[in-house]
Length: 170
Image (cartoon, rainbow, N blue to C red; front, side, top):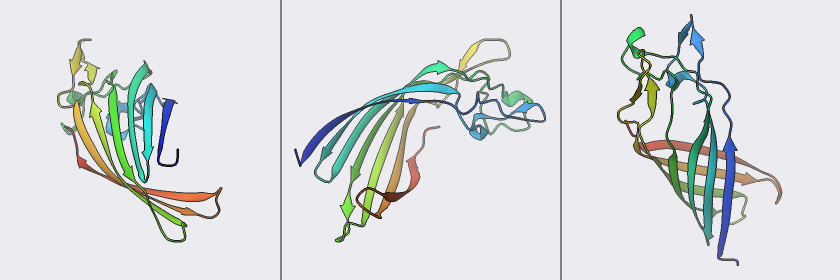
């Protein structure tokens, strides 16, 4: 109906790399990789109620292609954790969005909050071949986002999204 609509989401995310970009044969930490190296499955739902959108989803890594070989012990800094043969845990995402239109309906503004809960600690393989958890890699992240769109016609528009974290997990 016009005030309430449910929908479902299923999707896949594919990595751009195996997450082992190097400089001078030294692996870069995951913060400098273009991907986490996992194929992820997304399952979710959306409730559109008047000017509100409520989304919930789970992101599950189903195939790990990560070949990262970064060890903080062999780098010149302790700023990044070791991520050799990194394995990540699933995420649960919840988003609430409110839509506002200008009088001529050309501009739409959608402020929203995105809550991401990382369900467990990620892990890496030590130099001794044992798995070790990355402390503080689980927990909650909260992002604020403003999406602004301009409609050229009913069928074409351009959209700009600006986001910032409010709460960041370790």
